Image (tube, rainbow, N blue to C red):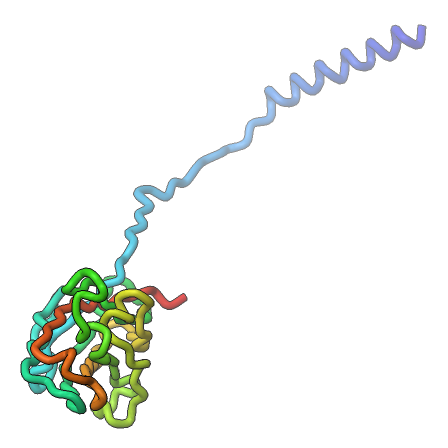
Length: 192
């Protein structure tokens, strides 16, 4: 008989639960956040010729055309870099020789003898003489072995830089009447 009482009690409780759920209603509502849009920015490094102050910034400029360089002489090429990124990000900037003519090593001597370095105005005082230059390597070595760290740029910041090419005083006549042409790619990476 206990089973019958227990089953009856369960039936009554189940009926009350169904009846109670049907008689109690709560108001509900929803709210929606529509058109959630995320647009990524970009890293935009630009370059300009140095003409008293920066010229017009763009994606590329013509490099120097130095002729008649002799052993013991160096030549400077000044230019500007700018962080023109759409995002408010700082950029670390490097320089790298991205192509070189003649393509093959050993075709001539000047691409292994000429030395190239960069100096950038990291303190923003407009004076490059108080800055530490990068290491100095030949265009062939830069092409084959890495890049030069130039510094960081904050959003909208412009930085004066100088590329220096130097023919060492111990260069001999094997470099006479030789030409090397190379492209330098300035890379910008977001600072984390």
